[in-house]
Amino acid sequence: MTPKAPDRQRLFVGGSWVEPDGGHYEVTDPATGGVVGWAPEASRDQVHAAAAAAREAFGPWSRTPAEERAAILARTAEIIQRQLVPYADLAQAESGATTGTARGMQVAVAASRFKRYAKGALEPVEQPLPPQVNEAGPFGRAAVMGALAVRQPVGVVTCVTSYNNPWANPAGKIAPALAMGNTVVVKPAPQDPLSVYRMAEALEAAGAPPGVVNVVSGSGAEVGEAAVDSPDVDMVSFTGSTAVGQRIAEVCGRGMKRQLMELGGKGAAIVFDDADLASAVAGIGTTFSFYTGQICTAPTRVLAQRGVYEALVTRLAAYAGALKVGDPREQGTVVGPVISAAHRDRVESYVELGRKEGARVVTGGERPALASGFYVTPTLLADCTPDMRVVREEIFGPVVVVLPFDDEEEAVILANDSDYGLIDYVWSGDVARAFRVARRLRSGGVGVNTVGRNMEAPFGGFRKSGVGRDVGSYALHAYSEVQAIVWAG
Image 1 (cartoon, one colour):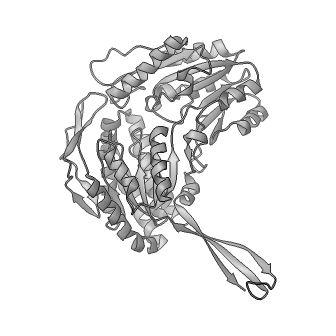
Image 2 (tube, rainbow, N blue to C red):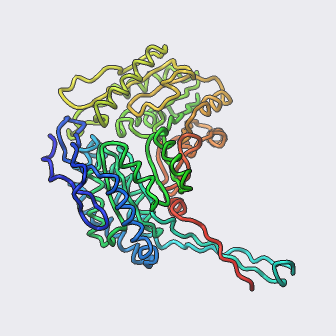
Image 3 (tube, helix red, strand yellow):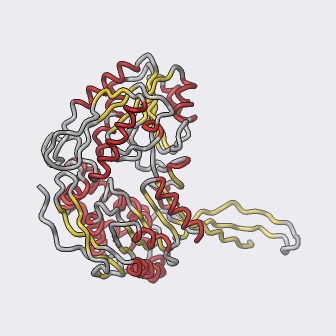
């Protein structure tokens, strides 16, 4: 059952809650098709006003002692943690996440990220460099030159966030940006923006000064375009599709704006003959369930050595077939809906395309018999070839494709034959081989016998999977510029 619709949401600009110029639009519960609430439609002028407010707040905020910034971020984490259940209920209604995912992987992760960057605000920003002896010359007398590298905040950062996690994704941008002394304009995904406004409320309650955090939303592309092209914006941090990322990059290029892009993925999972198949199936199987496959890090492209190919296909099919698909609020549900009817249709069209291309539909491929909501049955496509579109393009749903390979060299070639390069995976009982193969993969990250993450490890992609790295201290570097200070000793 969809929660009762709240009052019509207002924008958050310059520390004030502002009525939107463009009215409101419905936010839909993907599990029921019901109305969750009404999100504000900002005008272009209002988006630019938000950026101007962030610009005005930047000077004082960037000079605020790191300890004060840290305290605000820590209080934000505490407020989010206290409100975990109602926040998770809203996130579930907006995104279709299961209860465990909404609580444990959305809201709880957001709280942990604010807590992490409360500590991050206190990390050193100065690095002394070795002195250099300069002989006398056209620039002056002989001297010993000292140098210091100092990380400075970039300025105003536009954060454009993804729909698959309306809590952890914005928190992963806002918290490190604020910790470094930047101010932000947040443009949430149109499908589930209400959670981001709750995050803004938490920041406001924690003492974030007016203009430090601004949130503007809209159902179309216009709001995001205004948030990127505003002359007050110095940097854009974007998570979403490669196609949109390319358009943002073009605008940033014209204005010489910094970019942090976390884009699409088509992760290869290489499974060797000596792999622990139970571990490989459990890891790959997360594609069928976690966010209903709507996650860029999913191991969606399975490369199986011929000795285990049929066994792996059989076990993956059994795994997928045993998953309960349905209302994410019901106990035992593992696979909830995808975000919208349009996206469901897109995923289904890829499955049909796979059939036409010659792939074997081992399990799934049909729409679940549910009365309402936007559901896709976990689907396994076997006997695929590298040229198939279902192998090359990001489907962003609970669909896994499987290809065979003969030896290590072929596995590496197939894995690297992609426009993407976010995270790949290697399963092998020979750890030396697994690490050897990992070093040859053209991707920003590689999981060896796991799909788990180390949340201090750098995150980002090669090729069309993105630009830059974040997570842990790497995020603090991403939201900073490096200044050199040199003096004669």
